[in-house]
Image: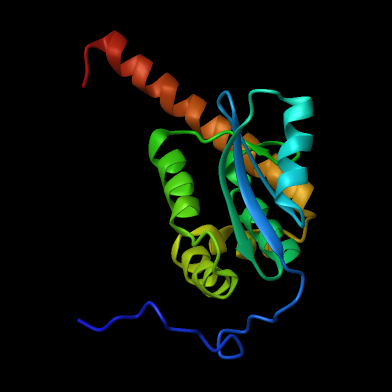
Length: 171
């Protein structure tokens, strides 16, 4: 088996420009997750702990183009949006997917993370939300509100259908 530990991607081939360096983070408070960006991880954690003392830092990973990637994440997770940069995952599999994926990014390799992010984003289904938002021609904020509301309505209809089946002794 080849050792790929020294592999360095040609960022130009992947369309990654070395600008807007920083970190994307995933933090948790209760059942809510905050997804954001920072140029200063230590300061961001310190600031977050002033408004939520028990906030848990799940991941803080380096990337190029953090403003663009943060927006892509917020768009790709629009159906799980709660408020601002906060998300509430509708089920354990969604939660596990996001948390595990964030943890899989390298702790110190900005170049590889930036390339891997593009594969992850496009292969995860999140790209579909970008396409849908573009088709609707709405702002990210409106798209998040609409998508979260639509998801909640679907979940409520599913719960009602399940309750109805249970009451009738079906399933």
